Amino acid sequence: MGDQVIVVVAGSPKAWSLWLLWWIVAKSTNSTRNAADYGLKIARLVNWASFVGGGLVTPKLAAKAATRRWQHLPSNAGRRKDNRPEPGRIASVDVGLRGPLVVETWGDAGPLVYLVHGWGGWRGQVASFVAPLVDRGCQVMSFDCLSHGDSPPGSYGPTHSCGGEMIECFKAVVTHLGQPHGIVGHSLGCANAARAIIEGQVTAERLAMVAPSPDMRLAAHRFGHAIGFSERTTRLMVAEMEKYTERTFDDFDIAAMAVTGQLPQGLMIHDRDDKEAPYQETAATVEKWPGATLMSTDGLGHHRILIDPAVIKATVDFITS
Image (cartoon, rainbow, N blue to C red; front, side, top):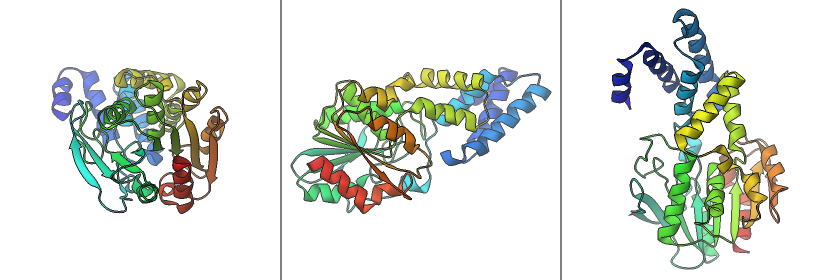
């Protein structure tokens, strides 16, 4: 991306301002919990450029820069945790996408269960469910989406991706390796798994969601407000995000998918202290999902919930019931 930016920057003052805006954002932390920190830098730069630079940084340019930052994968420690009980059978599988996906398998036979990681996660982070599922006679597969874990970069380049690309990864894995009995998703992986089911390429009898993000449109608006954007600039940013990813945020609305009656029997597990995905949204969503149940926890947050013994037991009991 750097060489492309340099070429464009040489062309116009607006391109210079966009490059400077992006540089400020890129130098900021990867953690979504510190969005306000780099957002403040964006807002200050926009104000400075508008006053000193004659308005070179417009809301549209700011929305483009924020969109690019939104697509940058976080890499905080929680997402890189290796919760595998032991290494499984690792393969690089050509599923017909931009590059092969790394897939890890445990167990030799039995009902197939997929573990679907979230934004910036990897197959090892969600592998805390492996041992008890294999003990119950299941075969378990976990994989790295493009630009995640050990898989190669996707269409958006290294360290960048989007939910739509992750959905296509999951659908391709299922097409090549088989339909599951059950799915366990974490964070954005929950919505991605649900969307793959709604679009008809994946079938499952059980869908467990751990710390889901039920409404990504609301999440995008929270992101815009956290970085100091006005409502108008936030709307421009949301539109730019949808254009960039070739998906609408409605595609990730779990509540809207639940009311269609097309999702399988569901279990939603969420911690009341989750700082990344609001508990209240999941509590409201489960009411719209026929037959779904909610398990609430306290003090586990967004990542430690994956290794809690009670959460693991409830999930495994649900998948194998």
